[in-house]
Amino acid sequence: MKAAGQGDIYDIWQLAGGKESGSWPELFGPEAGELMSAWGIATYINDVAKAGKQVYNIPMYINAWLGEKGGWATPGEEYPAGGAVLKVLDIYKWCTADIDLIAPDNYLPYEKAYNATCAGYARDDNPLFVPESFGDLNIFRAIGDYGALGYFTYFYGLSEDGALLPDLVRKMNNFRCVAAAIPLILKYQGTGKIHTVMQEMVSESVRDVESEFGFKQTQPVDFDGYIGLIEFGEKKSPVKRVEKLERGGGLIIQANRNEFYLIGFNYRLLLRPKPAYNGTRTSQLSADWRAEPGSYNFLISVEEGHFDKNGEFVAEMRRSGGRIRDGVWAGTPSPWYLRKTDNDYGVVRVITCD
Image 1 (cartoon, rainbow, N blue to C red):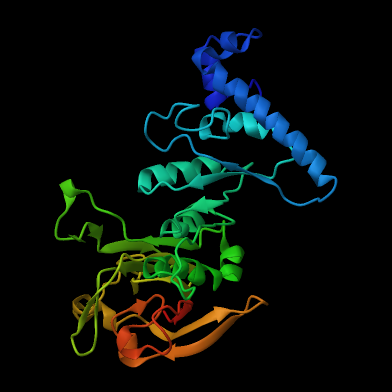
Image 2 (image 1 turned 90 degrees about the vertical axis):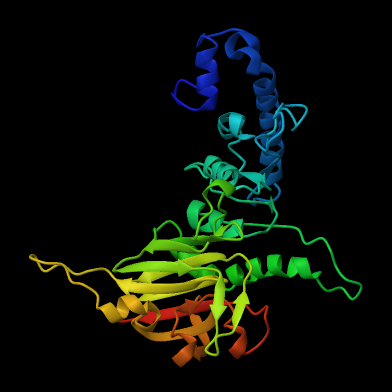
């Protein structure tokens, strides 16, 4: 605790007086029971892991039942006392040298609570791994914002013929589009080049013309050399047909100034170059561009595809003409020119010019 000089356990110790020695209650006050249980369980688990690695030297992790999930949040009632919750995570990291990861079961549906959990477990000494989840759009948040190196969910619910029930297909597609881009994600994690796309919820008190059905309709993104705008909501076809879409989300990876990869679905990307400055004045966009930005996206090519086992992008179809006039859609192309099925999610590569 002295070496750490900060953190939850250090703060609890200081709040109880920062004594140099004494019983658990004397050192940690009312938190003593949970902290003592955490120390006992953590050291036991590490002994088991150490013995196991002498037989199979493989990565080992602890699956953590969260304590910060709502309710009374009382150890021994709402969650097992002594488990690797955020409050006692320091104890677990100090006492489990043979454990590679402390991994949270993150079923929290709300943005603030979900983010706080990911941030708490994504430490320099503990990369984020999510062994249990709902499998919703938060998979993109965990990967893009917190560098998750693994993400799992459950698929309970099959029809009589063994197919996934309709409400689980979307969950499956979340994982399919990530799987199609794993080599790319691994290459750029931690570089700042991965941008999370998320159609966030809007609270009842602030709903306005920018929201529809409780979700935001746009998201700005700051790219190298470009200002990006993500649009959610409706797809409009060349014949003015409108299709309401489910909530959108995904990842955009800018490999270099003129190369983008889109992962996910139900959002489109618009780009405009950042204004140039020549030392005396800043360049301005034309009135035509501002009136119809989807027609001026500086696109050289837009291709759908996947990454092969060698990590190379394999283009399967090229989009052109009206298919890219109003921006670049992520995931399966619009319904009026599907090439396969509604559930075929891969990667979209965009090459631009200055």
